[in-house]
Length: 211
Image 1: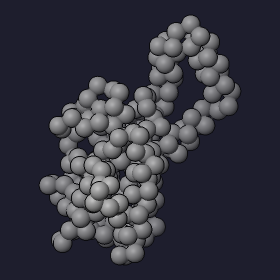
Image 2 (image 1 turned 135 degrees about the vertical axis):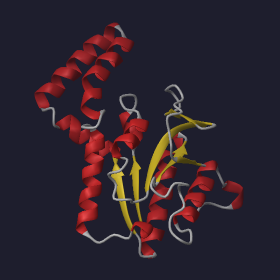
Image 3 (image 1 turned 45 degrees about the vertical axis):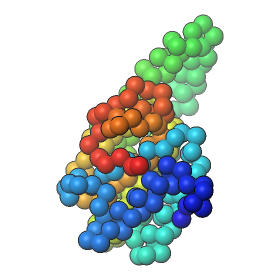
């Protein structure tokens, strides 16, 4: 599903390993813990389009083999959350951000974080929307947990207002035992991950990290 031998990248290797483990005999083997079916696929932010293409091909391959696949866009959930604030509130936030940026870009970013983080962070933030999407998916059909996967992507849209480690904590135990793969734009350093390669590396992750 990837390019030729001479074009193989860490992302290609990660996607191939993920596909192999998802299709493992006896059910998905993306985690050493049967009751914790989460994994992270880390990729360079510059590989976003290549990642999407690879996940699309993997999803098509799984569906052709009779799997159920749910793809959740963090960007879409983020935009829905912002729209829920109302046009007037968003216009006010944007106007103040522009005024503050002219004086201090750092203060402007801090101001945006103060306004946006409470909307997306925490148990009642975007995590609750992810849980709701999975609940509806599970309610629509009878799913075989060993032939189903949930991909959570487009997380880069939430930089720098959201930490993905908190997302996994909040959805743990609420995914109907379905395998969940978080597509993580960032840099892996041993068992630590730096979101978008910019935030301080975070070691607060339990799932297996591909590659």
